[in-house]
Length: 313
Length: 276
Image 1 (cartoon, rainbow over the protein chains, first blue to last red):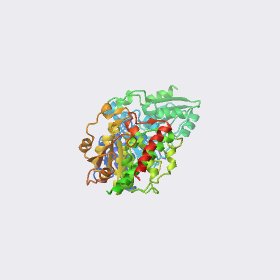
Image 2: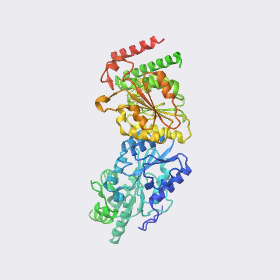
Image 3: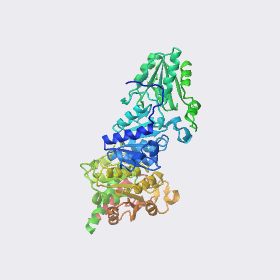
Image 4: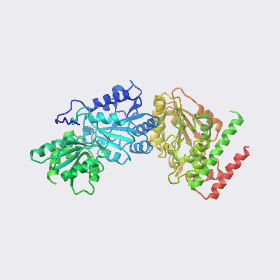
């Protein structure tokens, strides 16, 4: 795997990538269907609606959409279903849990605008608990998307993975970390940057913050590793434990409530290890409205905060 | 329908009721009322309407049954046993450890097309199955059975909106209007006004039929529409077929002595014997 990170914004927006990938996946597999809940304009798939009967708009009814996705899976199809993060997690949790998970109907849920990326849609649209919910569905596979190549790799393989899959991904900007065409493996984390003094386990938009923090710390002679787990569940606990042992200091960084998400998962992976542990995550709070830059500091999801946590250990 | 054909269906419905009670008796308790109220519907579906092969329960082009009122599992299990999907003795494993016959239907059992029990959830799944069959060019239908209390769940109406909006004419929605839910009558708990009018307003081709009228059921379930899903409102009686159950106010889930189950079974077997 090749790291191409520069810190600059990718010229491609996620919502232009999603329809391209789904079109490609549909061409390769005639069992694939895409469901949306009156947000095709936001997932970038609106242009495909009406051109193929495999793009299905369910209207504003996410619980029904999740159940329909499960039924489509029972009939032999491979459904993807999209809405904003809170609506494909909280709003339809029981349907995803039972109709898909418990009933063994494989589906892929795509939640856009995770955490503070919901920005101007505000607290009603800002999921800080979606990963926590999905984590307690037995066998669920969860990805907090870092960049465009990861989105492409996840969406391409999700249709053939068992059980419930969930990806949280922005609609707009990202910063490319991985080379185009990178293939990610479920349960296998990536060492984005090596280091010996501490390790940051970061997902989604926090990978960028972690890399910036590592750069700042390097200037002070502190050599920090950054691990991106790819999937928060299953989590590459072995890789995290290896780096915990090697560095003695572990910090998780996530755009999510500290309860139930990556922080909880990493903490669990470290049970019984004599290491120091810290986190950068949303405290037990609701979301609120504002520009993403404002929210980034409001919730302390910054590279500076990561630096301070590591220095304070 | 000839008198002989009608009698055959009525006898089959009685056999389903007997199998249902034997199934529940094996565990000593279970959802008697809502199982008995759909026995005639299941008899007509499995004897005359649905296309299936018990030896190939996963056949893609089969007609599907989604019993969204999953607590009527014993009636479905009884039907599946009588139709050769599972051995009759398996009915006696209801709710035993590691059984494939839980209180609420689970699709790990051959012949169960959908896992149900959390009320309302079978509706969207049935809609998804019907849509999936259409998208894959299969000429088959999905029969969805919901309770009436179940229709308290808003998800049912989301599914209804979608089914009619997307013209799923391969979906038949059977609403078991037995007028009672767990805590009491629909009128006491949450009045539903005119169910048939509701389905009509949602865009269904709707018909109301007595829940134990096998001839009427056959006609209703044979209905086809060019561009609408079908709704069949079953004007039924909770606990139908066993007098003591019909008359019991708390017949949703019942826990009675083996001798009581035996009395019910005798009543049903006597009726079957009378039919010759």
